[in-house]
Length: 283
Image 1: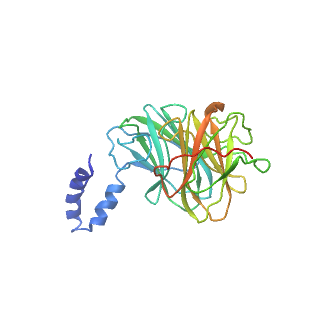
Image 2: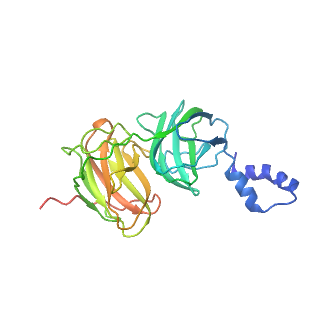
């Protein structure tokens, strides 16, 4: 159902309420996707066939019917959201109406998975959608992420500047950490990034293989992990980072895959990346 059709249905209801503000109509429309409240450790089932197209996740060409679930964590922590569907599902996390994470495929077109650092007391919307309008039944689960903090300081391959893209390779790299998504065991490349200002940042990897991207805080805790972002060769994270703190960005591969990649950090939500440059040679 289109947005105009939804408002046409809502309009008579507003008349029954004695003529309400247009903002009420918008609020009703934004909550039109059925679902419910999801708790940590819970698994729920849903069906997107015939559902309204109320949300538009930024990955997987997700333009079909969707369902949403609300998660309000009691404690801050890194949790894993996973969808197993009988169709090509897309999973996204929204905060304050904006997408902060999105995944199309996680090892299978019927599985989507996100690992994200949630903050206590905030309200997150978990959106289950479909690739190019695909729809069907699904199971959605929310569990603590199986993260293992590094046992010591990470050895960095280099540092990244804002909007200063870099090309490199994981071939022959070390194996210091095991990100919680994409079965990422094997060689990786790790880069440090220190933001000059607090805010939302997008970290993007485009690779010649099935890449995995993870971000770690200064305390060694994993802040997020992504396997595929619209393509098996792209991984992307959107994170709120603090000024002056150094974060470790890990580029790995699904099932231990390796190869060449490009990585860039952008300010704000997902946006087109600038042209990439080669990694500097050791001197």
